[in-house]
Length: 260
Image 1 (cartoon, rainbow, N blue to C red):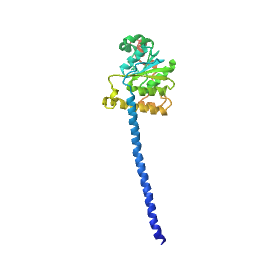
Image 2: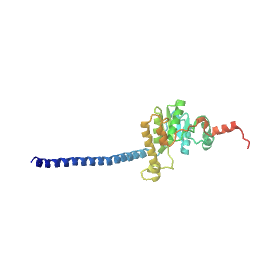
Image 3: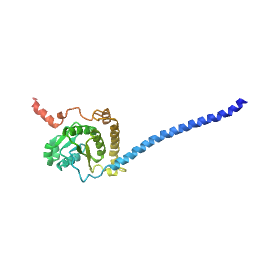
């Protein structure tokens, strides 16, 4: 009689346990599906905010800062930066990321009215290899001159990442963005123009990487992450005084003519 009473009690307990186990599996499955969707939604929302915040017009009023830094990558950037130096928006200009074959004479040919400014008040950085390197070299330049505020010149779509990198490298320096807008890339139609998305989507990914990297590293100059994300060391290992066409000409003069 005791066995007959205990048999029906065992079935409901086993069914309840199986039901709880199935419920936990469903909850885990829903969580596994919901988490990637939430991350994707956050990334898409971030992209919308990133793209819509990019200015489509250059600022009408430009405040004065201690100095100006322009990141190379477009001819109009350098011309605008030299114009800002001529308008006394800063006392000195750093052109960061210059090609080793480009010297002051080449820049003077492109900007003939700024020949005197190029001779007296412009420094050329040949060592920076990417935006991380631009920030590192700008920091060295700022510390060398004792500047406390910078007018940062680059393309409008490149400005968020540039400011993020500069702020990470120089947290005590006031940064004033001066975005350069060109007709070549129309960021105003970022939601339906493939030409805009082709530029902005990779730029947004790089911007996210820069922001996330700044949370875990203390100094981009000594960080392994800077090398991994940038694909190489952000700054050339060559000494600054041994780079550029001026150094090549000096070397040729010192070595003298060679017999053929």
